[in-house]
Amino acid sequence: MKVHELMTAEVWSCHPPDTLNDVARVMWDEDIGSVPVIDAKRHVVGIITDRDVAMAAYLQGKHLSEIKVIDVMSRQVIACGARDSIELASRAMDLHHLRRLPVIDDEGRLAGLISQTDIARLVG
Image (tube, rainbow, N blue to C red; front, side, top):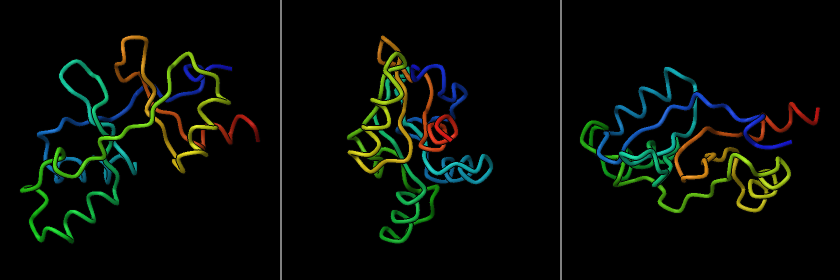
């Protein structure tokens, strides 16, 4: 089975100049823990987690509306391709201790997200 058959295609994303307040609102409203950061062409340039938001607020002592995504996002993004096997995506998650991976298309644009829960449902 391929990643595109199991991934979630409707994915919330944000942009580097967005504020942490914007991202935190989406995370709360949609009950999600991480959001891919994309550029104008939908290329994944980073990822931000709820932990990143919490630590930035704590360490910087600023209101979330004063902190930009670009200042706290992880720039090293582990992703998988939409045509990759589920096994390859699962190994990448295990190797890098991740619960979710952005999925990119053949042009490197965000196509979706796959999670350990998605894979567990398939196996279980």
